[in-house]
Amino acid sequence: GHLHVSTWAKNGLLGELVSQGDGASTDPTKHFVLGNGVPEDCALHWEHIERKPHRVIYCSDPTRGLEKLLNAWPDVRKSIPDAELLLNLGFGVMLAMRADMPGSPVAQRISALKDRCAALTKDGVGYTGWAPQAEVMAAMKMSSVYCYPGGPMPEGFGVALAQAQACGCTVLAPKAGALPEVLDNNYALLEGDNLAERIIEHLQNPRELAARKVTS
Image 1 (cartoon, rainbow, N blue to C red):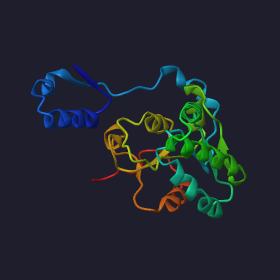
Image 2 (tube, helix red, strand yellow; image 1 turned 90 degrees about the horizontal axis):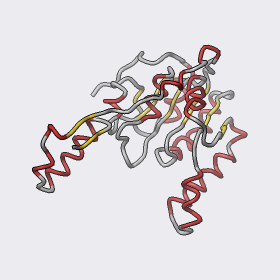
Image 3 (cartoon, one colour; image 1 turned 30 degrees about the horizontal axis):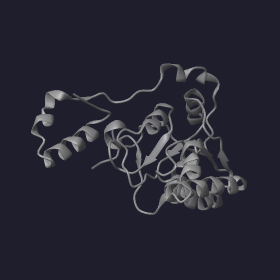
Image 4 (tube, rainbow, N blue to C red; image 1 turned 180 degrees about the vertical axis):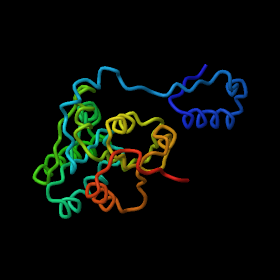
Protein backbone atom coordinates (compact mmCIF):
# COMPACT_ATOMS: atom_id res chain seq x y z
CA GLY A 1 0.00 0.00 0.00
CA HIS A 2 0.86 3.68 -0.16
CA LEU A 3 0.88 6.01 2.86
CA HIS A 4 0.31 9.74 2.30
CA VAL A 5 0.63 12.78 4.57
CA SER A 6 -2.27 14.58 2.83
CA THR A 7 -5.01 14.09 0.26
CA TRP A 8 -3.15 16.55 -1.97
CA ALA A 9 -0.07 14.32 -1.90
CA LYS A 10 -2.15 11.20 -2.57
CA ASN A 11 -3.90 12.76 -5.55
CA GLY A 12 -0.57 13.90 -6.97
CA LEU A 13 0.88 10.39 -6.85
CA LEU A 14 -2.29 8.87 -8.29
CA GLY A 15 -2.11 11.35 -11.17
CA GLU A 16 1.45 10.27 -11.90
CA LEU A 17 0.52 6.58 -11.76
CA VAL A 18 -2.38 7.10 -14.15
CA SER A 19 -0.15 8.98 -16.59
CA GLN A 20 2.31 6.09 -16.44
CA GLY A 21 -0.45 3.57 -17.15
CA ASP A 22 0.16 1.78 -13.84
CA GLY A 23 -3.43 0.68 -13.24
CA ALA A 24 -2.57 -1.87 -10.54
CA SER A 25 -1.21 0.81 -8.20
CA THR A 26 -4.24 3.12 -8.56
CA ASP A 27 -6.50 0.83 -6.50
CA PRO A 28 -7.99 3.27 -3.91
CA THR A 29 -8.00 0.56 -1.22
CA LYS A 30 -4.19 0.62 -1.33
CA HIS A 31 -3.85 4.33 -0.56
CA PHE A 32 -4.13 5.73 2.96
CA VAL A 33 -4.00 9.34 4.17
CA LEU A 34 -2.30 9.45 7.57
CA GLY A 35 -1.72 13.15 8.01
CA ASN A 36 1.11 14.14 10.32
CA GLY A 37 1.49 14.90 14.00
CA VAL A 38 2.82 17.14 16.74
CA PRO A 39 4.66 15.39 19.61
CA GLU A 40 2.49 15.42 22.74
CA ASP A 41 5.29 16.55 25.05
CA CYS A 42 5.86 19.76 23.08
CA ALA A 43 3.05 21.58 24.87
CA LEU A 44 4.58 21.52 28.34
CA HIS A 45 4.99 24.63 30.51
CA TRP A 46 3.29 27.03 28.08
CA GLU A 47 1.31 28.79 30.79
CA HIS A 48 4.32 31.01 31.56
CA ILE A 49 4.95 32.08 27.96
CA GLU A 50 3.98 35.63 27.03
CA ARG A 51 3.23 36.41 23.40
CA LYS A 52 5.16 39.25 21.75
CA PRO A 53 2.70 41.11 19.50
CA HIS A 54 5.35 42.35 17.04
CA ARG A 55 7.30 39.13 16.60
CA VAL A 56 7.32 37.16 13.33
CA ILE A 57 8.73 33.64 13.22
CA TYR A 58 9.95 31.38 10.40
CA CYS A 59 11.00 27.75 10.98
CA SER A 60 10.56 26.19 7.55
CA ASP A 61 13.11 25.03 4.99
CA PRO A 62 15.17 28.12 4.05
CA THR A 63 14.47 27.46 0.36
CA ARG A 64 10.71 27.91 0.95
CA GLY A 65 10.60 31.68 0.73
CA LEU A 66 13.16 32.90 3.27
CA GLU A 67 14.75 35.19 0.66
CA LYS A 68 11.38 36.87 0.03
CA LEU A 69 10.89 37.35 3.76
CA LEU A 70 14.35 38.89 4.24
CA ASN A 71 13.76 41.20 1.26
CA ALA A 72 10.51 42.42 2.80
CA TRP A 73 11.82 42.81 6.35
CA PRO A 74 13.47 46.28 6.06
CA ASP A 75 10.09 47.73 5.01
CA VAL A 76 8.43 46.04 7.98
CA ARG A 77 10.97 47.61 10.35
CA LYS A 78 10.45 51.06 8.84
CA SER A 79 6.76 50.81 9.66
CA ILE A 80 7.12 48.98 13.00
CA PRO A 81 10.52 49.85 14.56
CA ASP A 82 10.28 47.23 17.32
CA ALA A 83 9.30 44.37 14.99
CA GLU A 84 11.29 41.17 15.49
CA LEU A 85 11.94 38.31 13.08
CA LEU A 86 12.98 35.03 14.68
CA LEU A 87 14.55 32.44 12.38
CA ASN A 88 14.81 28.93 13.74
CA LEU A 89 16.69 27.17 10.96
CA GLY A 90 18.99 24.21 10.62
CA PHE A 91 21.53 25.36 8.04
CA GLY A 92 24.05 22.71 9.13
CA VAL A 93 23.04 19.83 6.85
CA MET A 94 22.68 22.07 3.82
CA LEU A 95 25.99 23.77 4.47
CA ALA A 96 27.65 20.36 4.74
CA MET A 97 26.70 19.90 1.08
CA ARG A 98 28.99 22.79 0.24
CA ALA A 99 32.03 20.87 1.44
CA ASP A 100 31.06 17.79 -0.56
CA MET A 101 29.86 19.72 -3.61
CA PRO A 102 31.71 23.08 -3.75
CA GLY A 103 29.95 24.13 -6.95
CA SER A 104 26.43 23.26 -5.78
CA PRO A 105 24.10 26.25 -6.45
CA VAL A 106 21.86 25.21 -3.54
CA ALA A 107 24.77 25.07 -1.09
CA GLN A 108 26.01 28.48 -2.24
CA ARG A 109 22.52 29.91 -1.90
CA ILE A 110 22.13 28.57 1.64
CA SER A 111 25.54 29.93 2.63
CA ALA A 112 24.58 33.37 1.31
CA LEU A 113 21.27 33.21 3.20
CA LYS A 114 23.01 32.42 6.47
CA ASP A 115 25.40 35.35 6.01
CA ARG A 116 22.49 37.65 5.24
CA CYS A 117 20.62 36.55 8.37
CA ALA A 118 23.67 37.45 10.43
CA ALA A 119 23.93 40.85 8.72
CA LEU A 120 20.31 41.69 9.57
CA THR A 121 20.65 41.26 13.33
CA LYS A 122 20.75 45.06 13.68
CA ASP A 123 17.27 45.12 12.10
CA GLY A 124 15.65 42.86 14.65
CA VAL A 125 16.45 39.55 12.98
CA GLY A 126 17.42 36.74 15.34
CA TYR A 127 18.85 33.41 14.20
CA THR A 128 18.76 30.54 16.70
CA GLY A 129 19.85 27.61 14.56
CA TRP A 130 18.50 24.12 15.12
CA ALA A 131 16.56 23.49 18.34
CA PRO A 132 14.45 20.66 19.81
CA GLN A 133 10.76 20.70 18.88
CA ALA A 134 9.63 21.74 22.35
CA GLU A 135 11.82 24.87 22.13
CA VAL A 136 10.65 25.63 18.59
CA MET A 137 7.00 25.48 19.61
CA ALA A 138 7.66 27.59 22.69
CA ALA A 139 9.18 30.19 20.35
CA MET A 140 6.06 29.98 18.18
CA LYS A 141 3.93 30.52 21.28
CA MET A 142 5.86 33.76 21.90
CA SER A 143 5.27 34.97 18.34
CA SER A 144 2.30 36.70 16.74
CA VAL A 145 2.75 35.77 13.07
CA TYR A 146 4.20 32.76 11.27
CA CYS A 147 5.18 33.92 7.78
CA TYR A 148 5.63 31.32 5.06
CA PRO A 149 6.10 32.88 1.59
CA GLY A 150 6.57 29.45 0.04
CA GLY A 151 8.91 28.22 -2.65
CA PRO A 152 8.86 26.42 -5.98
CA MET A 153 7.97 23.11 -4.31
CA PRO A 154 4.48 23.18 -2.70
CA GLU A 155 4.11 21.69 0.77
CA GLY A 156 2.84 18.11 0.95
CA PHE A 157 1.77 18.74 4.55
CA GLY A 158 3.41 21.73 6.26
CA VAL A 159 4.30 20.53 9.76
CA ALA A 160 5.77 23.84 10.95
CA LEU A 161 2.68 25.76 9.80
CA ALA A 162 0.36 23.34 11.58
CA GLN A 163 2.46 23.68 14.73
CA ALA A 164 2.37 27.47 14.51
CA GLN A 165 -1.39 27.36 14.07
CA ALA A 166 -1.68 25.16 17.16
CA CYS A 167 0.44 27.71 19.06
CA GLY A 168 -1.99 30.52 18.21
CA CYS A 169 0.07 32.30 15.55
CA THR A 170 -1.57 34.00 12.61
CA VAL A 171 -0.28 31.97 9.67
CA LEU A 172 0.52 33.96 6.51
CA ALA A 173 0.89 31.57 3.58
CA PRO A 174 0.04 31.10 -0.10
CA LYS A 175 -2.80 28.88 -1.19
CA ALA A 176 -0.62 26.05 -2.47
CA GLY A 177 -0.17 22.31 -2.14
CA ALA A 178 -1.77 20.72 0.90
CA LEU A 179 -1.90 23.90 3.01
CA PRO A 180 -5.62 24.63 2.51
CA GLU A 181 -6.40 21.04 3.53
CA VAL A 182 -4.01 20.83 6.47
CA LEU A 183 -4.80 24.29 7.85
CA ASP A 184 -8.52 23.92 7.07
CA ASN A 185 -8.31 27.15 5.01
CA ASN A 186 -7.72 28.94 8.31
CA TYR A 187 -4.86 31.29 7.46
CA ALA A 188 -4.22 34.73 6.01
CA LEU A 189 -3.58 34.51 2.29
CA LEU A 190 -0.34 35.74 0.72
CA GLU A 191 -0.64 36.77 -2.92
CA GLY A 192 1.53 38.85 -5.25
CA ASP A 193 4.39 41.03 -4.02
CA ASN A 194 2.72 42.63 -1.00
CA LEU A 195 4.53 40.53 1.61
CA ALA A 196 5.73 43.47 3.73
CA GLU A 197 2.25 45.05 3.67
CA ARG A 198 0.62 41.82 4.84
CA ILE A 199 3.09 41.34 7.67
CA ILE A 200 2.62 44.94 8.81
CA GLU A 201 -1.16 44.58 8.64
CA HIS A 202 -1.19 41.58 10.95
CA LEU A 203 1.40 42.93 13.37
CA GLN A 204 -0.54 46.18 13.75
CA ASN A 205 -3.80 44.31 14.25
CA PRO A 206 -2.83 41.30 16.37
CA ARG A 207 -5.46 38.61 16.68
CA GLU A 208 -5.72 34.96 17.53
CA LEU A 209 -6.06 32.31 14.84
CA ALA A 210 -9.37 31.48 13.13
CA ALA A 211 -10.60 35.05 12.67
CA ARG A 212 -10.45 34.65 8.90
CA LYS A 213 -10.85 31.88 6.34
CA VAL A 214 -9.31 31.66 2.91
CA THR A 215 -11.87 31.23 0.17
CA SER A 216 -11.40 29.59 -3.20
